Amino acid sequence: MSLRSVLRCLPVLLLAGFTPALAQGPPDPNALIAAQRAAMGKLSFMDGVWRGPSWIATASGERRTGTQTERVGPFLDGAVKLIEGRGYGKGDSVMFNAFGIVSFDPSQNKHSFRSYAMGRAGDFSFVPSDTGFVWEIPAGPMTIRYTATIRNGKWREIGERIPPGGDPVQFFQMNLVRVSDTSWPAGGAIRPR
Image (tube, rainbow, N blue to C red; front, top):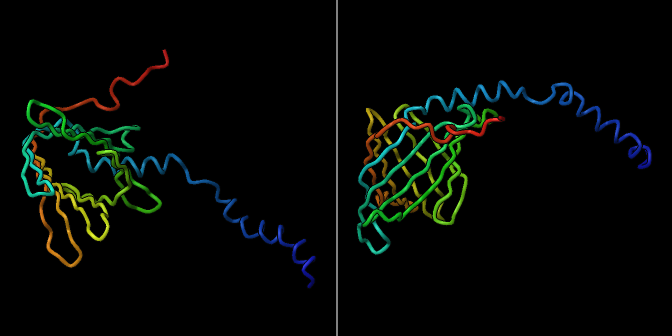
């Protein structure tokens, strides 16, 4: 068969290869959203307004204490979860402010965490459990790991630096108490009229 004959048949061959995929059509959005809602519903224990003491160790080893707040709520009718964290220092000054989005990808059967904090943003591994979660940030040769336990209206979270082949070194801790429910972020949506 000449090259010219192969080139003439190529569109037909390519179309034949894609026909089964085209016949299936796109995934059903209702099924995808239902899977997302089911996965995110298991994290409803996070929802609400939280407040409590926190500390962080600076690079020099100094420990700074403050008050940490978190507000957490479902969005897109429960398909994603939004989190805002604020760390307050002396005189109620905001020392830290972060925003996160927890989502679930049904095609990969896993959660992810999109975080915005301190001028940085990234997508990170997020592994939920019945009583909390773990999320990790690759930081060069190190890993930064946050482990949260949430139960009975209390949220304890620690942050650790994990060097390659070394033991974890804790640099952060917060011990929060659930203060109230919140309608954030879905509350107050703009109505059509």
